Image (cartoon, one colour):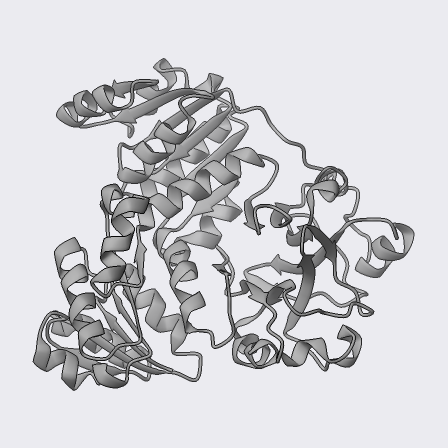
Length: 446
């Protein structure tokens, strides 16, 4: 697949990194020569020093043969114009990054499609939705729902008193045959693996578990976790992510939003009518204490400063806050943040990449998820009549060892996959995959 990426910011760079591992022709466009030099030094891609809205530069990038064009600059107008030109010049699919909620209204989205933009991506909104999902399932580090929650993937950190610690995967399966969940992978010491039957669960393991609604409670009991109440929530940072999170939660919870800028605080107080907006310096822990930090059920730090987000969450945890969530954009900090006891990490570029990467698969992929703190992905495939995966039971399919089929959604029901499972046409199949498996599993479904 020929893919052209315009804009080498954090999301563009991460997209390039992930796609360079596959069998793709990647072309990147950026106005900053130093960004292109950095890309060329690390990845096997073609670089163009220029503008995504230049006819000449788009033609040089081979836009006529492009299967996918993605514009990820920080300017709405550039991204929209670039996608319009790309479609007119021959690109099959186009995706534009935007930061205006108005563009995503159903009535307005059709206008963008009519001018040649196949999809719009709003990273801050996606990240806020991720935070809200985490608060709906407070006993987990991450949660991803498929087909409206018919199947869900939970990421759970094993505490010292978890009943499954010290037990083998096979032992848990044999002694609990009626369980409606399955451990697909384990992240340990910064590495993610698909466990063998003799793998033993350890304290601080991050376990990736697939289940449906009936399996959530027993899954949490085995992991030694429990759902928490989220009545009182403090959000540090009046960023778009913080504002959208507050707006989504203010009708069901007591929200305090801390913003350092006075003028911005006054504006947000008018907009967030159900949120108590406080003008205070979030870097001052005494100020946060005065505003009741120690009484909160949840603390969410979404300032533009990774270090502040991490440190403030650690302080909140020390004061007894049950659940902490930090926005961390520097991927080098992800494992550090997790190791310091922060309950959940939000990374906008991983979330945005998840949305975009599904367009790079030849099979139909309704969902594609990049996991925080791991190089693994989770995909939801829609099975077509000519898919190879329907020929035999799973145990006879020769499915790659660096991937595992976790569950199947069939019409209105869902179930955990086993070796005896026979996949049918129109099934939705959830697959956990390490990076080395992506191209291999695509062939089973296209």
